[in-house]
Length: 456
Image 1 (cartoon, one colour):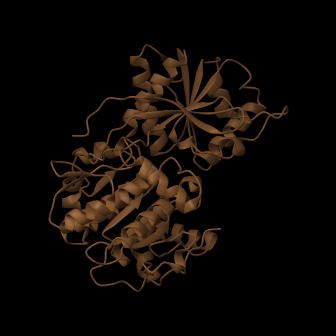
Image 2 (cartoon, rainbow, N blue to C red):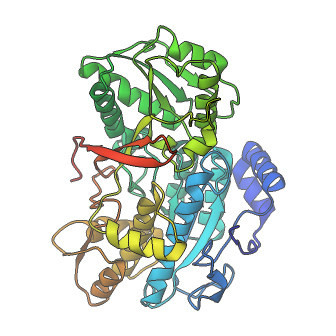
Image 3 (cartoon, rainbow, N blue to C red):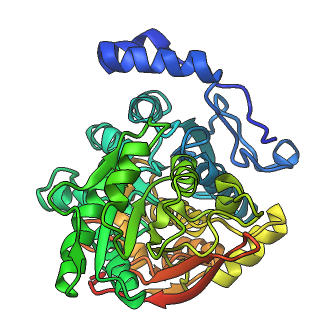
């Protein structure tokens, strides 16, 4: 069990007024259903949080202290990612505080559970920005939640860095100037993953492919990216005119499965999250749809070590998910080994798919605040590209970077998830892992796929 500290008090009635009737109803429902929203120390979620001298509880803020918010799914469909992403941010804060903090003070982490729900995400961002007055926020995880939260961050001049919201919509909005430079992400957009999935389908010999996707920003964006990429490679998307989509809160998928597998395509590309996606795999097996030649190719949203367990076994004891393939952004930056060592030592487990991206998102905020000599969102925003690109000394150790900045020396931080070179839209570019579920239920990476694009 993870140990969360008691929520700090805030003016709930004032917050509900800001959210309006719809947001207020959603917030009250979430509070009733899930109890207290997790609030925290800099080691929130770590096994030894209470014993750390660097921990600073909400409500005991030191003047001039950097406050970083997290807006991550501790509950809901993405909880299997959100809990370890939260651990990664807490570990970054613990590491930074052990080497002097930022601007001579310990970093404080203030956490909100977005519940994998846009309404809860909007409520959480409102509290972080308007009540807690954070300088930057790591999150959200899902694109739909980030879409609901980003305008609140921008309005309040709070930097938002998502470790995993990959919808191309953010790139389009950034090009229009809607974010005023306050939006970044440490995972590449799905315009690139669509290309990676298309290449994977081609490598698997698939010529006719159907898509089955969650009907939200993430699913729609990835389908929109995959279809033209696969067609450009000479493939056919059998349901291109009417892609099969399902509601995020759906629990049965009989009609969707019949539509996607209709005509026995060479492969079905499944864009989903673990809880619902595993049900889809299970129901596909029960309908006999996985017994033929149709392969299932999946997106990064399904990459979890627990996929085999969630999807269950067939009558003869084999894992339903065995043999499925997918793509996910590679976590292969210059600092990956260092991060992996620190993470395993702390938690006695391997990092999850977006844990390096979460570490990097928090690291960038801390480094930018040190460079800016300020903890305000506007000042942090102006220094993010300065500390992640250019002619400064290349560093992979966040403490080394902070030390150089304190001495007035420029740095170029290269992280665990990649080189973290943000382009004008706040995007980064990376390669993609091809992952699979083996017969023993374990997840493994088999190869990499390189995609185009520039991080300049």
